[in-house]
Length: 163
Image (cartoon, rainbow, N blue to C red):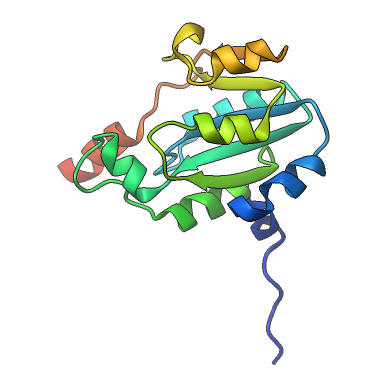
């Protein structure tokens, strides 16, 4: 029996050394968002579909495991590894490219991607979104997308632990 090829979505996962070429191949306008996306839920996928609708391509920056720990989300977070989180995200139709980052903020990744649109969830004021000033400075747009479904990984984990 011959080995099966890697799933197509795996090709959406990008390493830093290929980022420039991969971005150049994406149709514009280019949308960028970021986050931990530890346990994917309805709120996440709705938000990502809405973000994608703002452009032709969506790049998602995913916090590394160490970065998630530094965010103080809990000693047991992330539940899923960076590689697993990026694979699940890459499998979504809305995602064009997934890349991990280890810094505390995605600013360096935003500067490298130079998106036309920068997006965060509704819990972020536009003025507080990392990279907003830079994206607006080169003529891009910044959006804070209101939540349609109030979900959180933290709440999901609390529910699981109470069972």
